Image (tube, rainbow, N blue to C red):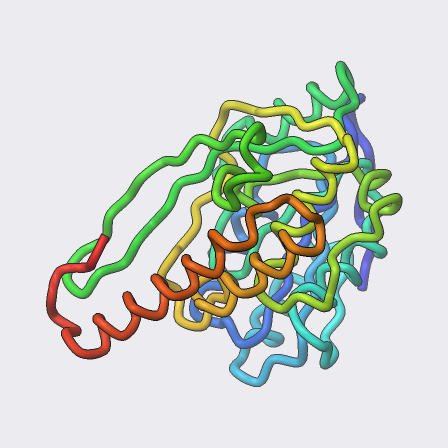
Amino acid sequence: MTNNVKQISKLPVISVITVVYNRVSTLRTAIESVINHPYPNLEYIVIDGGSTDGSKELIEEYKEQIDYFISEPDEGMYFALNKGMKMATGELIGLAHSDDYIVLNNTLELIGRAYIENAADVYYCNAFFVKEFETHCSYSERKAQHKNIVDSHVDIIHPAVVVSKKAIEKSGGYDTSFNQASDYELLLRLKLEGYQFFHIDALFCAICTKTEGRVSNSCNGHLELMTIHKKHKTGNHNKYRLSYVECRARKSYRAIFPHKPEVI
């Protein structure tokens, strides 16, 4: 474990966290998107949950370019993220999921400069979605917005969000009682508690929506969304009860007709 961060401009240090467990096929792209990023004040933290597929060995190839690296069994992604956030020394914290990658552009600089000007709590950006089919891939950019976060869990794209360290510390980070939707719960909680959100209208990352085992592909996440809305008393819990039923129906359809066009 090393600490190589040296602040070389007035821009704030942004800590980027990658948590990984057995993602050797996509991990290299994620790591290189961070270590090759042009933002000058970047701290990189990698938390491995005790991978057995070669992920740990791959990470060690880049140990001189990673500021903090730890590999040990943990209780899941949100436990690992909380661990990484406690280690972070940056004023701002973002993510580079092991099956995504950060776009090599000036978005982090835009975030850093915006933080100097307005010191918001949550900076949310746009994302590029890569959807894999049997014979081709589709690509689409999604613009984020926070005004409807109470009514919709898809308006803010969690991997394209950077949150201030102060907000994380005050809020307590991710609620690890949720296995699928703790990322949304954190952002919803910050919104309901009056933290300041600021939109950076720029592309932050590319997200692979068909990665096998990705937690956001699970229908159980809809049940957690229902519980989250009950917890925060938004009045929206019944819509997620319905969305769970719809998700199960889609998966059943695809299991029975695997080569049919996707149901919208």
